[in-house]
Length: 171
Image (cartoon, rainbow, N blue to C red; front, side):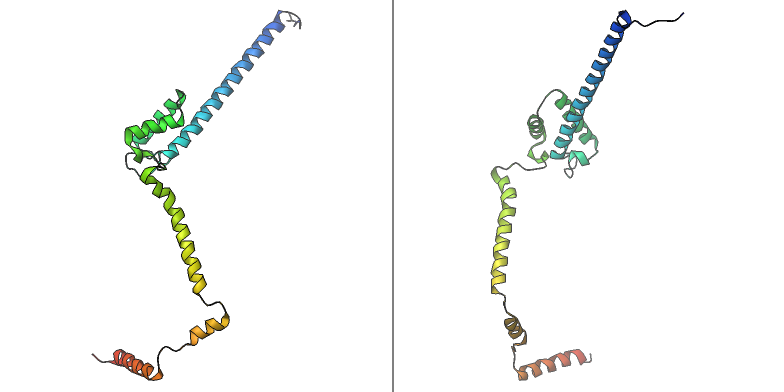
């Protein structure tokens, strides 16, 4: 007994439904994996923006203490629930204070953290330009400054005698 396959029969409809169902399952699985991957990427971004409150020395993505692992789990749970990055950061800031943020907000006194480096670079550039303007520019000027005598030969002899006396003095 051989089973025959009728392309226009009932078996064809069953096969079509099976393939459509398999395609649906695969596409749902792919979409779920992409959604989880997207959530994980967002979570890792947030992990880099928060400091672990157990020691305040490293961001969550670099820290593996119990508290930081709990915070990482809470971040992922909140992302799954649909909260935005700003909402999550605000939650942790309310819970632990502004210190938990790895980058200070650019407002109030914290503006100095953002503005000071720019001002320091500008001031350093200004000082450098002033120093470069005052330095001798020609070879002749450099040679003259290197060979200038600041003391007389008599003073030089006096200083050499004092150095010799200090070096060769017997204690």
